[in-house]
Image (cartoon, rainbow, N blue to C red; front, side, top):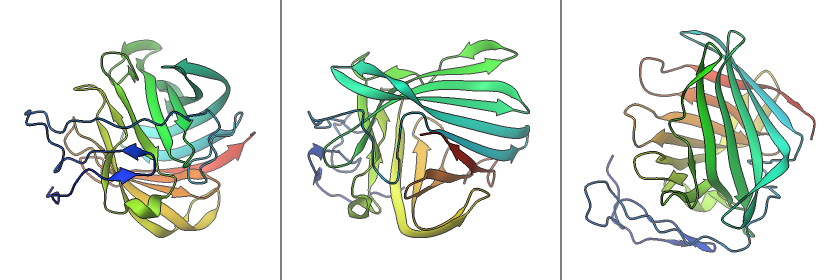
Length: 242
């Protein structure tokens, strides 16, 4: 992908270095030195990614391997990471009723409404046994750094690539705001004025997917854009609690 040569932008109270401008000369890509705000809290009220404790989001979709159900629960407990109290989100994926993935994600929000991703404890499960923890990372461990998972003012970042997480060779997800005017209908409800992103893992080829975030509901739809399973979709079917 061609990237314009632009300086590292000062955005709100943080600095996110883009690939073209901030390359440190190493073969692995850019030098990532985010200016992390000091006012991070577990109270996540960003309308495009709300995380009220006790809320459970349920998603469903059909894959080439079977019917997938994904439950995302915002826990009422918190975790302290590098002195920051973070919200914990428990994410479980079931294939035809069998648990295949389980993840605990940690998030915090700054005073400008940006939601920061502070790490995850991720497990891949087969026949009830953990077979991989690949992708797990935590801010402050092995030089891992947080990234922005949702902007407080996403309209200021359309077309801009940004890191959502960073641990070299382990956690290198990116995102880009594509649109703020999407209309989306899923089994749960119909929405207008939604945010569309494209997100990908820099460590995997053909990992790009589109995500649709709608005010008050968060993620309502995900569509895989590349690879043998391109076109597979996961959609919001219910929101409970909170």
